[in-house]
Length: 181
Image (cartoon, rainbow, N blue to C red):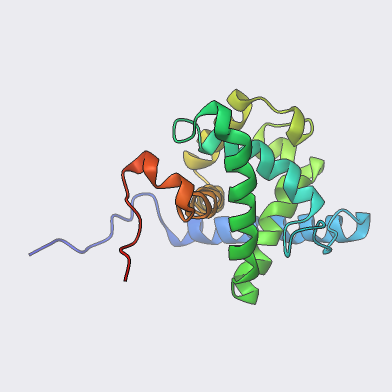
């Protein structure tokens, strides 16, 4: 029989409340600041259904780092473009609540006020090096703040699902494609 008890050494009611309050305050502040400053434009960039101009700079910097090793450098531009297309399609088909949370995450990452302290990227995303993006991802993955860990997991899953859902990614992992019927 498997032991199903939770190891509560890292998770207490107090820590859970702290993370929840901190996360709520952070997202509320970022959302309010973005709305008041006009940074959080809800208008998608031309050619996209959901992805906005502010999201594009971040995603075009993030995607190549996450696809390193899975895509030949000569094919990276096409892979990023295709991944963005798939990601936009997926975001457009999310439930309204999940889409709202994802847009809030993108807003937090786009605003200089929150981006610098949370990611360590103090300048614009398109000026960030691959090593800086890797450090940001590692920082969030290993953070003691559960909200940042969830943000890391969300970003990773969104990009990976968008890339590996595309036929051009299948050869790298040895998947022959779905059977013909």
